[in-house]
Amino acid sequence: MSGTSALALTGLGVDFGGLRAVHDVDLTVAVRERRGVIGPNGAGKTTLFNLISGWVKPTGGEVKLLGEDVTGLSPEKLSQKGLTRTFQRTQLCASLSVADNVELSVQAQQKRFNGMWKSVSKLTSIRSEAHEVLEQLGLAQYAAAPAGMLSYGVQRQIEVAMAAATKPSVLLLDEPTSGLSPAETNEVAAFLGRLPEEMTLLIVEHDMDVLFGIADRVLVMDQGEVLADGTPQEIRDDEAVRQAYMGGGDESG
Image 1 (cartoon, rainbow, N blue to C red):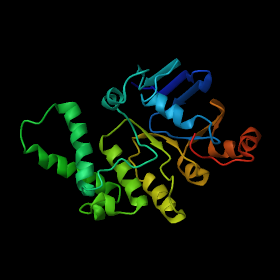
Image 2: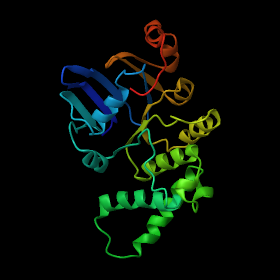
Image 3: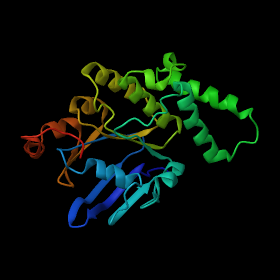
Image 4: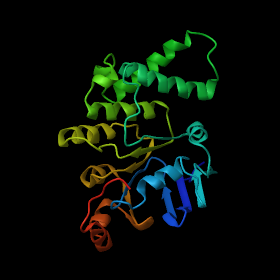
Protein backbone atom coordinates (compact mmCIF):
# COMPACT_ATOMS: atom_id res chain seq x y z
CA MET A 1 0.00 0.00 0.00
CA SER A 2 3.06 2.20 -0.47
CA GLY A 3 2.15 5.67 -1.69
CA THR A 4 -1.50 5.37 -0.62
CA SER A 5 -2.84 8.35 1.31
CA ALA A 6 -4.42 7.80 4.71
CA LEU A 7 -7.48 9.84 3.76
CA ALA A 8 -8.54 11.36 0.45
CA LEU A 9 -11.60 13.49 -0.25
CA THR A 10 -12.62 14.33 -3.80
CA GLY A 11 -15.39 16.82 -4.52
CA LEU A 12 -17.03 16.03 -1.19
CA GLY A 13 -20.18 17.95 -0.34
CA VAL A 14 -23.66 17.96 1.12
CA ASP A 15 -26.76 20.12 0.71
CA PHE A 16 -29.45 20.46 3.37
CA GLY A 17 -32.50 21.46 1.37
CA GLY A 18 -31.45 24.64 -0.38
CA LEU A 19 -28.47 25.22 1.92
CA ARG A 20 -25.04 24.29 0.61
CA ALA A 21 -23.31 23.26 3.84
CA VAL A 22 -20.13 21.78 2.35
CA HIS A 23 -19.22 22.07 -1.31
CA ASP A 24 -16.62 20.36 -3.49
CA VAL A 25 -13.95 19.73 -0.85
CA ASP A 26 -10.72 18.12 -2.04
CA LEU A 27 -8.27 17.00 0.63
CA THR A 28 -5.45 14.47 0.76
CA VAL A 29 -3.94 13.52 4.13
CA ALA A 30 -0.73 11.51 4.10
CA VAL A 31 -0.10 8.54 6.37
CA ARG A 32 1.16 9.79 9.78
CA GLU A 33 0.32 13.38 8.92
CA ARG A 34 -1.16 15.79 11.45
CA ARG A 35 -3.64 17.88 9.46
CA GLY A 36 -5.55 20.76 11.00
CA VAL A 37 -8.91 22.18 9.92
CA ILE A 38 -9.90 25.74 10.84
CA GLY A 39 -12.45 28.28 9.69
CA PRO A 40 -14.78 31.05 10.91
CA ASN A 41 -18.06 30.30 12.62
CA GLY A 42 -20.37 28.40 10.25
CA ALA A 43 -17.54 27.47 7.86
CA GLY A 44 -18.65 23.83 7.65
CA LYS A 45 -15.87 22.20 9.67
CA THR A 46 -18.03 19.95 11.85
CA THR A 47 -20.24 19.08 8.88
CA LEU A 48 -17.10 18.01 7.01
CA PHE A 49 -16.18 15.77 9.95
CA ASN A 50 -19.68 14.32 9.94
CA LEU A 51 -19.37 13.52 6.24
CA ILE A 52 -16.00 11.83 6.65
CA SER A 53 -17.05 9.81 9.72
CA GLY A 54 -20.38 8.59 8.35
CA TRP A 55 -22.75 10.64 10.50
CA VAL A 56 -24.01 12.53 7.44
CA LYS A 57 -24.43 11.08 3.95
CA PRO A 58 -22.79 13.17 1.23
CA THR A 59 -24.81 14.38 -1.74
CA GLY A 60 -21.69 14.42 -3.87
CA GLY A 61 -18.05 13.39 -3.93
CA GLU A 62 -15.95 10.56 -2.57
CA VAL A 63 -14.14 9.53 0.60
CA LYS A 64 -11.23 7.08 0.46
CA LEU A 65 -9.59 5.53 3.50
CA LEU A 66 -6.19 3.98 2.80
CA GLY A 67 -7.16 3.78 -0.86
CA GLU A 68 -10.56 2.14 -0.30
CA ASP A 69 -13.78 3.91 -1.25
CA VAL A 70 -15.75 4.26 2.00
CA THR A 71 -18.16 6.97 0.89
CA GLY A 72 -21.42 6.85 2.83
CA LEU A 73 -20.47 3.97 5.13
CA SER A 74 -21.90 4.01 8.66
CA PRO A 75 -19.75 5.14 11.62
CA GLU A 76 -19.64 1.51 12.79
CA LYS A 77 -18.35 0.24 9.45
CA LEU A 78 -15.79 3.03 9.27
CA SER A 79 -14.57 2.21 12.77
CA GLN A 80 -14.08 -1.39 11.70
CA LYS A 81 -11.97 -0.16 8.81
CA GLY A 82 -9.82 2.03 11.05
CA LEU A 83 -11.38 5.49 11.17
CA THR A 84 -12.42 6.80 14.60
CA ARG A 85 -13.53 10.22 15.79
CA THR A 86 -14.12 12.15 18.98
CA PHE A 87 -16.83 14.74 19.56
CA GLN A 88 -16.94 18.24 21.03
CA ARG A 89 -18.65 16.88 24.15
CA THR A 90 -17.22 14.05 26.19
CA GLN A 91 -18.65 10.56 25.67
CA LEU A 92 -17.36 8.95 28.87
CA CYS A 93 -19.12 6.56 31.25
CA ALA A 94 -18.84 8.92 34.20
CA SER A 95 -19.53 6.31 36.89
CA LEU A 96 -16.80 3.94 35.66
CA SER A 97 -13.12 4.28 36.42
CA VAL A 98 -10.75 5.66 33.82
CA ALA A 99 -9.26 2.18 33.36
CA ASP A 100 -12.73 0.69 32.82
CA ASN A 101 -13.53 3.27 30.17
CA VAL A 102 -10.34 2.52 28.26
CA GLU A 103 -10.85 -1.23 28.69
CA LEU A 104 -14.22 -0.93 26.96
CA SER A 105 -12.51 0.64 23.95
CA VAL A 106 -9.80 -2.02 23.92
CA GLN A 107 -12.44 -4.75 24.12
CA ALA A 108 -14.34 -3.24 21.20
CA GLN A 109 -11.17 -3.16 19.13
CA GLN A 110 -10.19 -6.74 19.97
CA LYS A 111 -13.70 -8.05 19.24
CA ARG A 112 -13.50 -6.35 15.85
CA PHE A 113 -10.64 -8.64 14.88
CA ASN A 114 -11.16 -11.71 17.05
CA GLY A 115 -14.94 -12.10 17.33
CA MET A 116 -16.82 -12.62 20.57
CA TRP A 117 -14.91 -13.80 23.62
CA LYS A 118 -14.81 -17.52 24.40
CA SER A 119 -12.90 -17.26 27.68
CA VAL A 120 -12.79 -14.82 30.58
CA SER A 121 -8.99 -15.21 30.49
CA LYS A 122 -9.09 -12.72 27.62
CA LEU A 123 -9.83 -10.01 30.20
CA THR A 124 -6.18 -10.11 31.25
CA SER A 125 -5.00 -8.98 27.84
CA ILE A 126 -7.66 -6.26 27.76
CA ARG A 127 -6.56 -4.86 31.10
CA SER A 128 -2.91 -5.06 30.13
CA GLU A 129 -3.46 -3.21 26.87
CA ALA A 130 -5.60 -0.53 28.52
CA HIS A 131 -2.89 0.05 31.13
CA GLU A 132 -0.30 0.31 28.36
CA VAL A 133 -2.38 2.99 26.62
CA LEU A 134 -2.74 4.98 29.85
CA GLU A 135 1.00 4.70 30.55
CA GLN A 136 1.95 5.76 27.03
CA LEU A 137 -0.30 8.82 27.16
CA GLY A 138 0.63 9.88 30.68
CA LEU A 139 -2.74 9.08 32.27
CA ALA A 140 -1.88 6.06 34.43
CA GLN A 141 -2.21 8.12 37.63
CA TYR A 142 -5.96 8.43 36.96
CA ALA A 143 -6.60 4.74 36.24
CA ALA A 144 -8.63 4.02 39.39
CA ALA A 145 -10.46 7.33 39.55
CA PRO A 146 -14.13 7.61 38.50
CA ALA A 147 -14.04 9.41 35.16
CA GLY A 148 -16.85 11.78 36.12
CA MET A 149 -14.94 13.08 39.14
CA LEU A 150 -11.99 14.40 37.14
CA SER A 151 -11.50 17.87 35.68
CA TYR A 152 -12.96 18.54 32.26
CA GLY A 153 -9.48 18.86 30.78
CA VAL A 154 -8.50 15.40 32.00
CA GLN A 155 -11.82 13.98 30.79
CA ARG A 156 -11.03 15.30 27.31
CA GLN A 157 -7.68 13.51 27.42
CA ILE A 158 -9.34 10.28 28.54
CA GLU A 159 -11.80 10.45 25.68
CA VAL A 160 -8.98 10.80 23.17
CA ALA A 161 -7.16 7.94 24.90
CA MET A 162 -10.26 5.77 24.46
CA ALA A 163 -10.29 6.58 20.76
CA ALA A 164 -6.57 5.86 20.49
CA ALA A 165 -7.10 2.52 22.27
CA THR A 166 -9.08 1.30 19.25
CA LYS A 167 -5.84 1.64 17.23
CA PRO A 168 -7.31 3.63 14.35
CA SER A 169 -5.36 4.33 11.19
CA VAL A 170 -7.02 7.76 11.07
CA LEU A 171 -8.26 9.63 14.15
CA LEU A 172 -10.56 12.64 13.78
CA LEU A 173 -10.44 15.03 16.74
CA ASP A 174 -13.33 17.50 16.92
CA GLU A 175 -12.42 20.57 19.01
CA PRO A 176 -10.27 18.79 21.62
CA THR A 177 -9.71 21.99 23.64
CA SER A 178 -13.27 23.35 23.42
CA GLY A 179 -14.49 24.74 26.75
CA LEU A 180 -11.12 24.42 28.48
CA SER A 181 -9.26 26.96 30.58
CA PRO A 182 -5.87 28.21 29.30
CA ALA A 183 -4.05 25.85 31.68
CA GLU A 184 -6.19 22.87 30.62
CA THR A 185 -5.69 23.81 26.97
CA ASN A 186 -1.92 23.66 27.42
CA GLU A 187 -2.22 20.26 29.09
CA VAL A 188 -4.36 18.84 26.29
CA ALA A 189 -2.01 20.27 23.65
CA ALA A 190 0.92 18.50 25.32
CA PHE A 191 -1.16 15.33 25.57
CA LEU A 192 -1.95 15.36 21.84
CA GLY A 193 1.77 15.45 21.18
CA ARG A 194 2.07 12.07 22.92
CA LEU A 195 -0.29 10.27 20.56
CA PRO A 196 1.41 7.49 18.57
CA GLU A 197 3.34 8.81 15.57
CA GLU A 198 1.92 6.12 13.29
CA MET A 199 -1.60 7.45 13.85
CA THR A 200 -2.84 9.91 11.23
CA LEU A 201 -4.68 12.86 12.79
CA LEU A 202 -7.27 15.23 11.35
CA ILE A 203 -8.05 17.95 13.89
CA VAL A 204 -10.75 20.63 13.97
CA GLU A 205 -9.60 23.17 16.53
CA HIS A 206 -10.67 26.74 17.40
CA ASP A 207 -7.39 27.60 19.14
CA MET A 208 -5.00 28.35 16.30
CA ASP A 209 -1.95 28.53 18.56
CA VAL A 210 -2.64 24.96 19.68
CA LEU A 211 -3.32 23.76 16.17
CA PHE A 212 -0.30 25.44 14.59
CA GLY A 213 1.88 23.81 17.22
CA ILE A 214 0.63 20.33 16.25
CA ALA A 215 -0.29 20.38 12.57
CA ASP A 216 2.00 19.69 9.64
CA ARG A 217 -0.51 21.35 7.31
CA VAL A 218 -3.74 23.28 7.81
CA LEU A 219 -6.94 23.35 5.73
CA VAL A 220 -8.98 26.54 6.00
CA MET A 221 -12.71 26.46 5.27
CA ASP A 222 -15.06 29.37 4.70
CA GLN A 223 -18.76 29.18 3.79
CA GLY A 224 -18.54 25.44 3.19
CA GLU A 225 -15.61 25.59 0.77
CA VAL A 226 -11.84 25.28 0.95
CA LEU A 227 -10.30 28.73 1.26
CA ALA A 228 -6.66 27.73 1.71
CA ASP A 229 -4.44 24.72 2.36
CA GLY A 230 -0.80 24.95 3.41
CA THR A 231 1.76 24.87 6.16
CA PRO A 232 1.00 26.76 9.37
CA GLN A 233 3.29 29.60 8.27
CA GLU A 234 1.66 29.80 4.84
CA ILE A 235 -1.75 30.00 6.48
CA ARG A 236 -0.59 32.71 8.89
CA ASP A 237 0.65 34.77 5.92
CA ASP A 238 -2.44 34.25 3.73
CA GLU A 239 -4.35 37.50 3.19
CA ALA A 240 -7.60 35.70 2.26
CA VAL A 241 -7.47 33.80 5.54
CA ARG A 242 -6.98 37.00 7.53
CA GLN A 243 -9.94 38.57 5.76
CA ALA A 244 -12.14 35.55 6.53
CA TYR A 245 -11.41 35.93 10.24
CA MET A 246 -12.01 39.66 10.45
CA GLY A 247 -14.94 40.44 12.70
CA GLY A 248 -15.35 36.88 14.03
CA GLY A 249 -13.68 34.06 15.89
CA ASP A 250 -13.21 30.45 15.00
CA GLU A 251 -15.98 28.59 16.76
CA SER A 252 -17.66 25.33 15.87
CA GLY A 253 -19.10 25.28 12.38
